[in-house]
Image (cartoon, rainbow, N blue to C red):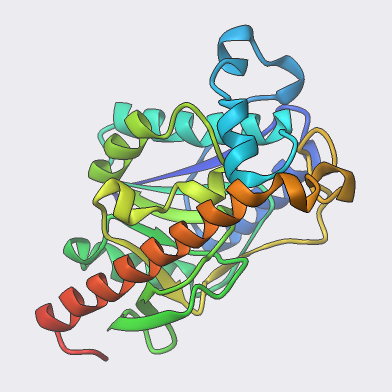
Length: 256
């Protein structure tokens, strides 16, 4: 996996998280590079301008959090760092990820089948309703998703996908994990490894400034009609995209 660049997004002040992810990746034998995360406590005016607040309110139905902007900009920077390197693929981690022992073999298999994907989710908060299209290992498959799959703790991306996303992701109008894998928007082959070899560690306290789960953050239902309309349209597009990709995969190769 010499063509693989592994980046870990980590705040300078998140020392315990850094130690934790360091041990995990050492145990897996994965060389990696730390990418200092954009700190929401130190955002510049130019960085704050990258948040489209009216669009965020309309699509997400919640008050904005600067910590989400910091996370978003950190992932965009990770793609830029990748594109500035000579690597063919980037493995991008958030520092609250839990990596499984099967990850190296899954990565090796993915790299051996580069034409089957542009971006691959390696973790999932929701199931994504995966439909397997390629056996990667004895226990893991490359799958097409038919429903929403949140979280951005771990994913693999090629140069084409990074170049496409880095020019189209800004300004921010949704949390990063709600938008970065919109294959129908980007014209990319976005896939999921099922079952995911990584997961988000819910035991770690969030470093996002503010409380992402605060009930007071969500707008009253009477102010969320635009959000409901957006989400319905988005999920219909997701399903259409997933069925189309599944049809293409089934034409290209037999299901496992």
